[in-house]
Each structure stands twice: as structure tokens, then as C-alpha cells.
Image (cartoon, rainbow, N blue to C red; front, side):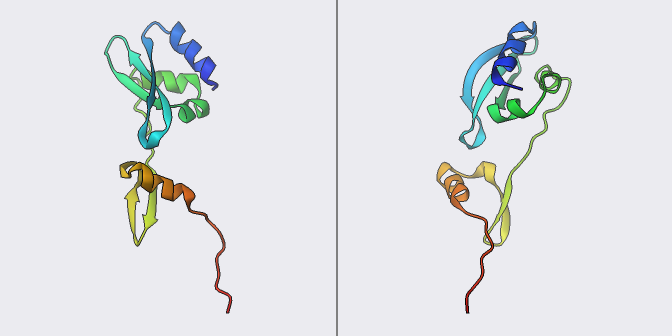
Length: 106
């Protein structure tokens, strides 16, 4: 769904109110939506809005459905760790890494 469509749906919805932009985990841009009846604030990364249809987003925003939380984990120096706990410089290192087919020439 495009962001403009999402904003139009939120504005037309009687129970939802757009609160503005915010930074989600990992420095990703997102929006904050408030459920008027409960006061629940939900932060949604803009990339999640673009990948999800309105009925699913609406159910999450009004509390009919639990949000699906995805955690990015990576294996570094022999153990797994959650990327969400990393600082900005460590996340930058992860983004700078390249996957490839590496071999030694002998």
C-alpha cells in the first residue's frame, strides 16, 4: 500500500488518529498512529506499510490482531545476537558487510 493511501485510510477511520513521524528501531522512518478509544500508540515503519494491505494494518491498529514482530538476528563471532539491540555504528558495520563466494588462491 502506498503511504498516501495509508494516510487517507487513517484520516477516514473514526477510531484512528495520525500523530506524526517517528524513528523506529534501527533508525528506520515510521509513523505513529493513535487509537482514539484506547489511547494506544503504534509505531509502524514505512517499509511495513508499503508491504502490507489496509485490512491487516487496520486490525493491528485497532487491537483486533497482534502485530507480527520480526527480529533480525545475525551470527557474529560464533554466536547469534539480535540486531535491534545494536547501536547505530554496529548496524552500519552490518550493512557494510558483503556476502560473496570467497576462496583462497593457493
